Length: 67
Image 1: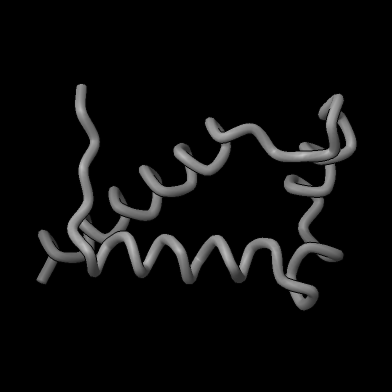
Image 2 (image 1 turned 90 degrees about the vertical axis):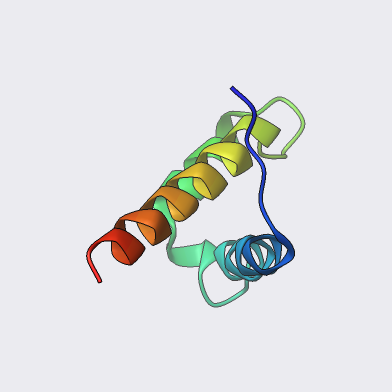
């Protein structure tokens, strides 16, 4: 199944990703720190980002449906 986003959704995901890895969040984010610690190269896998983006868009769709 293809997953596409419009420009507003892309900007929203980018902003959220910047927050996830910001100095104010990353030191407190156990999940992301564990992901980085267990990787062989010190980076998060792209699949982690994709799952974040899909979850974020799913939540936004749910919010729109409930309005």
